[in-house]
Length: 262
Image 1 (tube, rainbow, N blue to C red):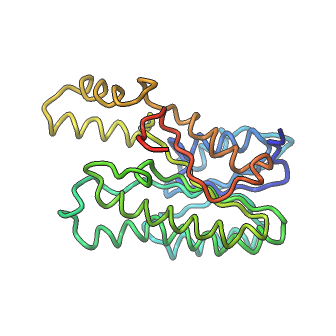
Image 2 (image 1 turned 45 degrees about the horizontal axis):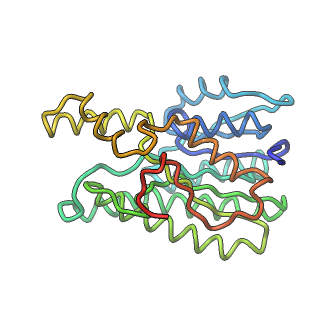
């Protein structure tokens, strides 16, 4: 199985923590040059120094806040002009705030659309020429199992994640002829800072202890535990590898079997 990413460069969103960071580490261990992108330069600088280095690869970072899509696009374009093409794009950023769909303000939907779909679209358009030139392209979107079955209390997230999934499938159809694949990884509950916040909020709203909340949540998972970020990253990295060259336009849940559909 060919998992070698030597000579490839990967841009990883939201990559100073959680699934983004775990994915960046896995890609680096496979030989890729990794470019981290997030908003906190201090964290980025520290994380770059911690990435595995294979064959003397020099990793890098881009500072950009995903709430400002034009700035993200500008900064990535500047990096490309100075450094050359990127063949692997991992679209990953934090999800919208929880809450019922009917109580969300219209601007909440607009902000989430910009955060996720607009940034994803801009990045694909920027990186696509280099992928075609290199004869290698991988786009992996880290989304949510809600694209299969909407999750209660995540109205805005369900809506926007679904839009990203359909955008991704459309791109897969359009770009497959160039040998560029587009796929989605759908994490279930994963041990990240976001999950810690979700547990804390549920505890506050229900009056149950955090331990009780955790027990209820893991009880819905056939494997009776949350995912580790690295377990999600394994799926991301595989889809980015040469071994996944004929896997295109699919959703891969990494949720311990929780999602109640095929």
